[in-house]
Image (tube, rainbow, N blue to C red):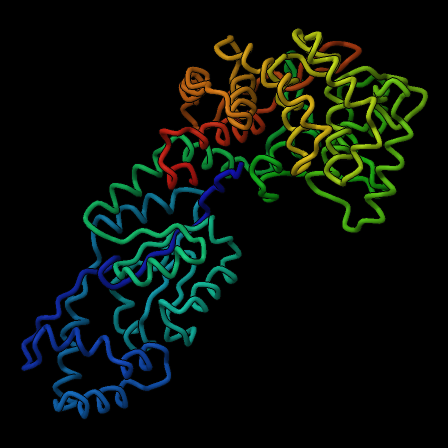
Length: 481
């Protein structure tokens, strides 16, 4: 199941989108003829900077049997008629206040014409401006779109493109860009999207990027890698997170000081390392294979997994840790090497030993969420599919149960991935969104020896956005904001 990606940029055309204008002039050239001139190959060459303005007017004069001076006068009057669309400008000002979305111009316009219209718009409202005259290519050429995407460093699915020409909209759509044909309803549509729960959640995430520290149930702030990895997995955007890796390849739960630990010593752990191996990777297959070999040394004969890369801290038996380690093995086609671990997960589901949480994970929904992540760690594997029906039964038992925002988000995501209807849970999650656009933290994990619970608003918000994006009632383009 694919997840809609957050929109990070909106690209606007100029003529007939940002600007209104009139082809009616005081010259002998009719509006119809003026528009015909705009569709000639000569004009296209001018827009791309391959012809100067005077050379263009002279060539057009020969093609249409009109004096070049008359053509120059007609276009001067047409440029003078350009007026910014007040509704579009109001939207641009709103967008400028948002940290999550950048705004760009992409227009078929010559250098000379752009210079002439420049005083008519506040260009500080845009992050970058791309004209055919400057780039040397015009819409609907896909090379122009590819050039802009490369420059703004965004993927096609992260962008909305607004244009008044259907051929340009189609060209954008063929590249995977979300395109809108501009009409009287476009501004309202965009404004509604920007005010949608997903857009508000996105704005919350980017407004607080790299500041998503976790918090314990007794108010202690914790900087950790684990929550950062989950945010990264949900959003696929590294600009949101702050990670601290280990040059040895293993990862530690804590990204800073081990604030919850007496003596401040906390060894690298298999749980965080397994997540990092799948989400971040290690660069080359040899290093990955070596890390999996090392992790296999900490798997007990019964399939349970030691929590730490430290044989003096023999903590084992947490089925979620086992599931995360097993997911890493399956991700790199080595899941068959841990059959007893898979059996351990099966038995956990069969006997519902997760119902009150595990040593490190406090809620049933969190546990089931990670078990569901496990079965999706390999594209298709018959061994993993053996726990699918049982997992589905256990998820169905959770539908409609009470839970905080994190519980609901993980439940909805798990149910959606296995085709289980959970509308009431999704609706409840919608209503838990806060005024600032985020969702309150839920208790993601707990420190085993003390039972102190740890939560993170960034994790809850990223997962909640992902969960509601799957809603059948959420328009596709809204789900992508």
